[in-house]
Image 1 (cartoon, rainbow, N blue to C red):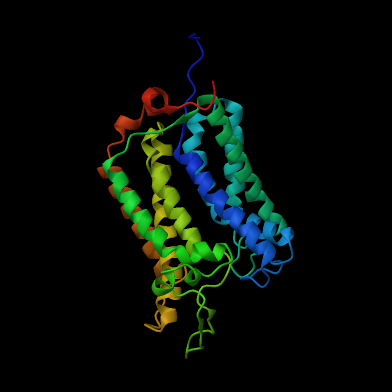
Image 2 (image 1 turned 60 degrees about the vertical axis):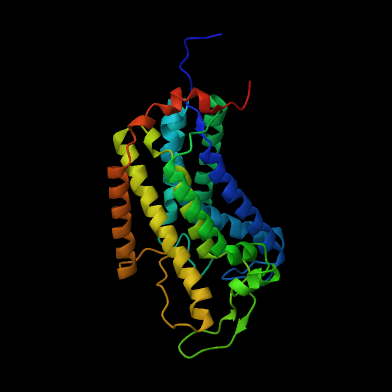
Length: 323
């Protein structure tokens, strides 16, 4: 029976997929940092659930709060009321606290009181996601040619990240048949001139290369829905942010992979610079330039006009969640 109430915009299915990616990694972090002592730059690992939750809170700051900012931009027009939009703005401000220097520092990955602010922001974005899904259900979109590129690129990066996937579980990838021939993992490498003592090639616990993979996968998933944002300024801002997310994530992935799988084999002493924290450097200049190029090409070559009405009028692709 039809009523006069406007139809709620459905939630893109890519959004819960992003949440699922981070939920899996968060669970791995909690378990691994709860049971294994002496992990990278944390003091409470191996001390039980407290140590695991501490590292998980920092993970919600970096990189999850960065992803939550993109989700807010995508969800904003779909929110079922003005009050929800106020909550979205508050959530974005809390998530943005992560950008403040010292909130997340690679040298100290123990949770601090300030880390609670972005964590609350992430929780609010999760609740907003639920509100949109409850009001409008889920919506898929047709497969397009560019999705083949996304899948191929994502598969290549995921294969390269297998040592980090097992490290998140507190394992070494060389225990998996076949992977020991492809990747260094448990090998204890000797000290070399000009380079630190490596201990294990890939230490147990979470790696910033894995963060890079998650950012790239998120950019791939959410980029499928940018054209559905009707406000021109918001659409362009989201496109630019996802372009930066992709380039930044890939740079972190490349840095960690190159150091662990190339430098640690002794093939070269040159390392791709660490770009986890923004600084005025050549490497960060290249990230910014690459992001601008990706954004400019993307917005120029992709025709989004056909997507602008899809949140409300893509009935064949809707996936109802309740009756």
